[in-house]
Amino acid sequence: IFSDMGFEVYSADLDEKRFKIGGAVFHRVDLNKNLPYPDKFFEHIVSIEGIEHLENPHHLIKEFNRILKAGGKIILTTPNILTVYSRLRYFISGSPDWLHTDLDTENTNLYNILRRHINPIAFPELHFIFKKNGFLLQSISGSGCILSWNFKSLIFSFVGIILKLLMLSVLSKRPFSAVLSTKELLWNETLILKAEKIKDA
Image (cartoon, rainbow, N blue to C red):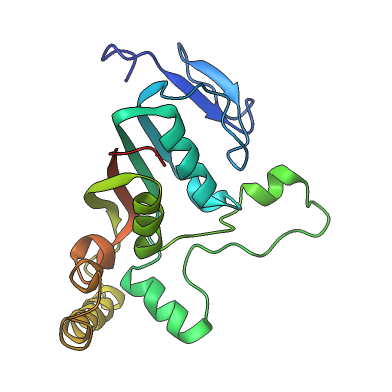
């Protein structure tokens, strides 16, 4: 799609056998390490469901800053661990949704480990990482609405309303209280963030 729009496209992934895009330059890349691109090389970066697999998400965003031109944009998607369901799960079990720590002890090679969600990240931390590394967050959206017309969804809807009221009243003076109670974070399985590079990290 991007090639058809006139962009020169580069793709990167840890396993080239599982990730090939026709017409795009491909590089085998471990996103935990330095990226194999020169400084200020790209105008846009699209990172789809990747950051939650990394040992050091701060390093990745710092590298994105390095390889982006001034004013360059990032579009990043990651599982949303602040849905109503995930917040209830954390309250009950102490673990958010989308955290994969159950590894097959007989298959602990690097790829098997990194294909798991070893580091799901909530919106406030992502916002902090962007800001710390020279990015201005421009928009927050989501996809994969968890609501449907069944009893389970009605319960979640009720819990969501209670959460929203609690956050607006008890946490009204704390950062992100308004954002944390939006429909984008309460009801969407995937978080989509758009940010602009405003300074070098």
